[in-house]
Image 1 (tube, rainbow, N blue to C red):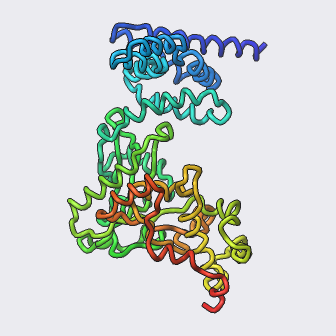
Image 2 (image 1 turned 60 degrees about the vertical axis):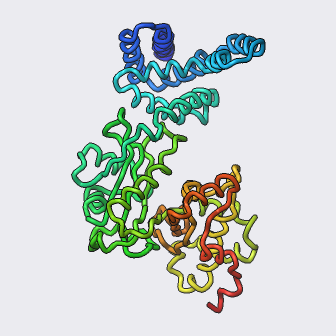
Length: 428
């Protein structure tokens, strides 16, 4: 009895959501439309997971574009081509779901609920490919709703409201923040800064944030930057701004790019505030390196090199006495090979962090041996970290070369690593 009862209950809840959606699209009055949008979002939010999935699947089937309307619009345009009929063709080709989402967005708190709704779509997408159409409509609208022109850059520091600081701890995706003491070490010292993008409808919820360290040199390891017991330096003596962590906060905004705007605007902000800063650089992870090394490196490395690299399969391999002489040169070459030669299906670098910074116009500057000895750093990148330099005189040209030719701006140091010979390492 219980399963049948639950089935009828879920069916009833799903049909209620469907009727509310149909009614919202047929509303003409603004006030009644807002009320119905609120009712639908509240019903969706309180629904069980099974009903939410049924509702999202229904959106893909019931709120797609009308093929007959498209055919009629095409025929009219072909008979009399012109801008007005072209506009009507565009309107006919748009999925009804996009208009439904626009109307839902009118409800108080609507934007946040829709972002969470897309998170649900993305979670279910691997097992429900029919949701791709729903995801495409969400992404199309979010790209315009979260346009850079609507975003506010805000400084995040130790005086920022605790409700936001708690989210910084939770959203940090690169270097885990283990409690308030570590957070204070990243925000409070005078040589540390943090900036985030906020949207007017998500006032206390950052979309993305970047953590910055002011230093006198380009760093080659993350531990000293995160050490809460370190002595801060006088920001006036700093020459370098280091972007050491960039975290996207909203899974539902996947595919909507903020990071390129964020870094460039933060660079401008820092230059205005501290004109003595000369170098803008990242200390970045290499998250795909270990997976590539285990699965695909044989296509670009020699048999002899692969044999040497088996040494890192041992626990605590980085403490072995001959590691510097034998493994380090070959492993460094492997990282450079991965970053410069391993390609994504798009023809751009396989590493996602590399694609991000190189597309922004940065230069691949340095590969850092044992830059991150955390469990995550060892597991994902064999301990390596990378510096990307944002040279303001080169950014635009680097971006154009990368965007149109997939050309990677890199330093001589990185390119020279490709020339390492295994036999030369044994003698130092």
